[in-house]
Length: 250
Ligand code: NDP
Ligand code: 8X3
Image (cartoon, helix red, strand yellow):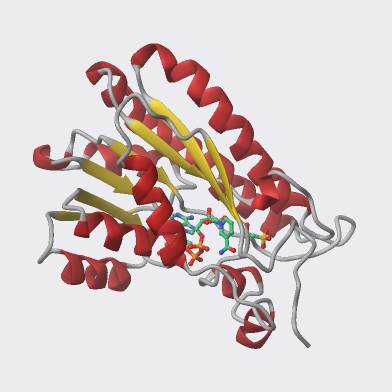
């Protein structure tokens, strides 16, 4: 039985992936900051597989290290790491962007991903096996107006995905990224700070991806034979042609 650690498992893509992995009988370490959500997902999935939850903020290196070090023995050998925790905060032009939003995105999407990776990789390296999936974005391949810092963080994830694959090649650790286009999750609610109307308007007039679409693809990627590494995938809704072009019906 493989063990998977998923960051951001309390919502959206991470929670859907936890559900898919549970059906595939992966042992799960599910991470997030909302205790009620962690308890909910644990209740839901523990009938299907073994589930351990960890509450920590990926922005804190210390909390991240302590949380990973606290994993009980039966969950400790992490075979699969899904670096998914992340969000956009704000959608403002560079000259008026909120520095607190910038710090949040850089600290979560880039530094948090690094902290979690560095806490998990040594065990994988020692065992000479492991699979890391970095959740990037179409925003890591292209830039869109007012996306400035969010796009920069996802471009950083793209670079880190390539760098990790090179550095961890010697240990036989697989590294790959999934880069989704628009997926209807809590992403836009977070970006627009709880403005549900503005968040919903992002997905109006076309069919966005569902978190389950990405979870299904992640499950496919991690269930390939060992010699197959899907290194980099862009997954868009059919209505979306690029970061800036979406065919909407009026
Ligand atoms: P959600 O807002 O639904 O989920 C984000 C998850 O990240 C939550 O589980 C949240 O948990 C966790 N998280 C956020 N901040 C922190 C933190 N500081 N410490 C620990 N966990 C944190 O969004 P999505 O599911 O859409 O996003 C998941 C990933 O997919 C992100 O990396 C995002 O950039 C990427 N993505 C999303 C797209 C979309 O259109 N939705 C498209 C392309 C990429 P909690 O609040 O409990 O801490
Ligand atoms: C999330 C997709 O287009 O809002 O990464 O940046 S987008």
